[in-house]
Length: 208
Image (tube, rainbow, N blue to C red; front, side, top):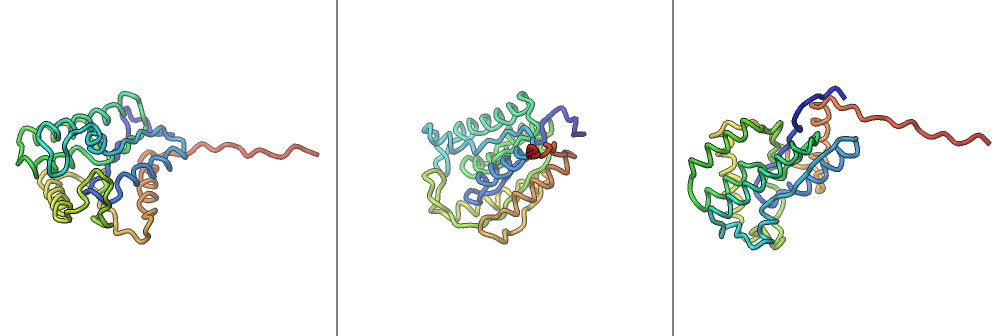
């Protein structure tokens, strides 16, 4: 491995809810681990917060969204402190800001903070998933309001433009399982790291 970075290669998957981000996170992490990389992956913080009784979706509050934001940042920083080679993030700090501002209005203090945070601890690549698939009631995200889902997607696109955030939009999937997304991200990650998986010599059968 020629990769000598002092911080992890940080990947973020962003989009509105119900687009397959969490599943894709774990698929990418599993494939990278198979190739010998030390990978940290964490799923969306809002889901865990909801289980703790913290309001999300249309019922969220400024303290609730700030809690989710800080927990997300904590997990990202943990990946650096634990010396992982790759960190795969279900969402970015910018997704959280979009949900917060839909409910609570534009927040200059948090905008400035997140810009500074992302400059100091940058994402190496942000992949944006297209808004595909039907909303599924998982007991966490609002599965009834397509307007809510689309508004988050539109707001996220606007924020990416306003902040001039570099990102790559994944293509529309050609299969229901969307395996091409994981393959694409894994291939780009291995190339960026110049990673050559170690090869274990095949065992030969003992001579008769």
